[in-house]
View (cartoon, rainbow, N blue to C red):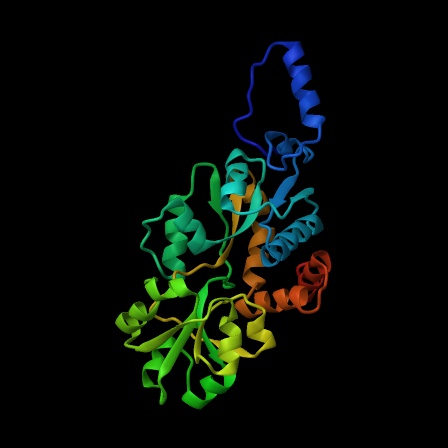
Length: 303
């Protein structure tokens, strides 16, 4: 099974072939250099990850699940952001990567208008470059949300963003300064849900301000481990104010059919609450990524 597309063929000169082989065996100070694709043995599934603990945990789950199914796996973790790793995926040097539907769609189509999980997933499949595809998306997300404390949710009977319109107290929304101008910020809240808010630019202390009561609604990412550790409630978004960004395996088409059964089973088992719990094990309990992945796979009957 090949891990790279578009390899040059027809090179006749023995000297050039010898030089190419020698170059492939040399180490490089650039982890994203072209010779990286030769690090994996022929037929290995090369699993990559961002330099982000949550993404690396998912990548390690993919890797261990594949190894349990007798695939050979090469790990290329903590690569960086999309501008760094996407060329590696397009070249075939990396063959499998945990991604996020909404953010990935916007990377390839900045003008995309899809918002709901189903629409974003469908639009993403159309927007991907030739040679790449996605397997089943997970219900787990890592996206913007409006989140409240458990006490505030219970006191006001809140389960969705729409319920904020009937709150008995004024709503103060906390988030980064740029939220005030985002389409899902105060203007979007009012136009989509009829919720009027006062905005407070809380920056890096958004969750702390929410817990202190300085704000009563906060813009928090849905995979933030503090949702579990501080017993926060993510409000449902039935009108898709936020762009859906579900965890999704991005994969080289050449290996998609081979790994689909294994990786789709992982996606089916990974839930929003489950992803938060995995992140807690990393940030709060400081467990290693391989240990976190191994236990999750075992607990879910996948190994």
